[in-house]
Each structure stands twice: as structure tokens, then as C-alpha cells.
Length: 378
Ligand SMILES: *Cc1c(COP(=O)(O)O)cnc(C)c1O
Image 1 (cartoon, rainbow, N blue to C red):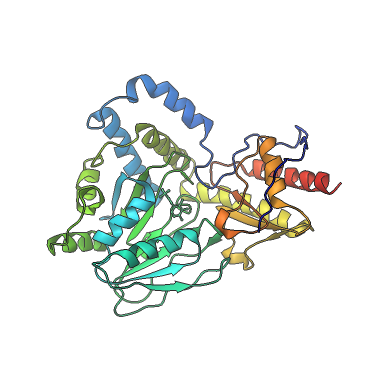
Image 2: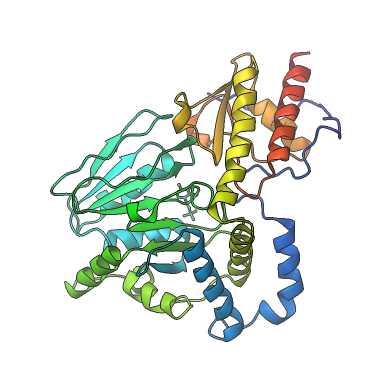
């Protein structure tokens, strides 16, 4: 159990240690000031204008082109988008991507949710759910009767990442990359649906989903539509595909979210693409895990090196130190959202390493934690 902190200890972190930007949350996460300034500059001609006109549609077109470039999408893949975030996409997938039976790798709070959505759908067979202990990930197992494999690139609740590879056999591969996309490398030939939302590596706001759909995924959507299965319109991926091809969404999107999202994708592409953005995460991860390995009061929660996420790090603190008090002191000093995922219930800090977060700020955060732990002990 995490102790409930009633009073935050009065510890002032020296200004020389404090990071330039104090946002380390795993979503919503740091939005770059440059993107906000660009939005403010465009506001009077962009915000509050029709999403069916060129001003907004050109931003959607730029975003879709930019994502295709960022992920080196092969011909025939369609960058698809709609409202409702990743959670709405899960529901869309239970209607429009799973034919009868899915297999889910369930290794934390987020990966378990898509499995639960598929299990609850009356028109589907019970899914196969492969689990593993928190802090690890299971491996997919090829099956003849599975028509969709549900993988998660990064389990945000535990800080475990896994490589995306295609199981043998004909099933579609759908990857929840909500916190991994843009921060972890991926080969597009390994997936049929790579889906995410913009409030994590893309430094924007929530409420939108994006799915990179392969030709096989599009065929599945079309075949299920032809089969006569009833689909609510707001979750219908046929409707989403039709609108996306016209650089719009089925219903009204959040225009600021689109703008900030596009700005971030341009920033990635202008600086070298996924190699640049994932490289920043690699540097931050190197700094953070090296610090945790060397500090006598901290241990990376995830034991296998290759499973330790480069986008969301989890670090256990020694039982003699109250991690909740550390997070509370950090928060009182303007360094926010280092609390662990609630339901994990560990004496832990969780720190986002998304591309927008400067590796130097991660180094500064490490020094701040060391300072606070020393002050609490003293
Ligand atoms: C944040 C997150 C979600 C939920 O995204 P919403 O847009 O809030 O629905 C799902 N999966 C993963 C892996 C996440 O990190």
C-alpha cells in the first residue's frame, strides 16, 4: 500500500537543480511551448473555423502526410483518424476489425482493457487472453482460430515495452501504440493497425485517435461491413476511412489538438524522423536507468533490460523512503506527475521520457529526487 501523504514535507529544492520544464506525466504529457506559441499565432485565423474548409483540412492533410512519412508507411496503408481517443478505437476494433476471435497480450491496466472490450462484445467468441506478471510481457502464440492479435507497444501502467513482430499465420496484428508511437521504433510490415492518441509522444491533447491501417486491415473492415454486422456510426471504421481520405473526421474534432499534433510531427520529421524522436527517448532512458541502477535507494521496477521502457520509466524506491512523499515534494516544487500508476500500488515513481521532454531535464529530475530523498532522510 502507498501511504497516504497528509502533509507534504517542507523541502525547497535549490533552483540550480530544478529542470527547465517540470512536466513528467505519462499523459496528458508535456506540450512543447513552441507548439503552443505557434497555435497562439495562428489562433485568429484557425481556431473557431469550419473543419470542412481548407484551413483545417490542410492541417489534417499535413498531419496524415507527416505520419505516413514518420512511420515510412508502405503504399496502400491509410492514416485514419476519428474522435474519442484510443478507448473509442478499441470499441471500433471490436466491431470492425475482429471477425470472430482475438488474442490479447495482457500485462497491465491498458492492455487488459481491449481484452475486456472484446470479451464483452456479444457478437464475438471469447478472446484468448495471455497474461504475465506485472513488469514483464507475454509473447503472442500463433493459432489457427485467431483472426486478430492485440499487442501493446508500451504498457504505460508498468513501464514495459515490447518489440512488435508478426506471429506466424494469417491473423491481423493490431498494436496499441498510444504511449509508444513516435518514441519507439517500429517496422510497418509487422502491423495491420498501429493505433494511438496524441497526448503522449505527440505532445498534444487527448480526444483523438489515429490508426495506421494496412491493406489487409482495410479489407477486413470492408468484409465485415459487407457481412451486415451492425456498427454504431461513430465507431464505424468504414465511415472513418471514408472521411480520413478526405482529410476530415466524421464529426467535429478539437482543432487545437490537430494543430499541436501536426506541429509535433513536423518537428520530428524536420529533425530526422523517428530516428530523432526515438533517439531522444533512448538518451533519456539511458540517463534515468543508469541513475536508478547506481542510486542505493532506487531500483528499476522492470528487471529485464530489454523490457525497460524508453518512453515511460518506473522506478521502485527503497521501503525506508516514502515514494508518495517524494512525489509530493517534487510537485510542491513544480515538478509534476511523477506519481506511480494508481492501481499498481507500489512504492514507486513513474516518469515519462517522451520525445518532447529534454534529456537534460530528465538528468535534472534525477538530481532532484536524490536531493529530496537525502532531505527526507536527514
Ligand atoms: C493512455 C493510453 C490509453 C488510453 O488512451 P485514451 O486516449 O485516453 O483512450 C490506452 N492505451 C495505452 C497504452 C495508453 O498509454
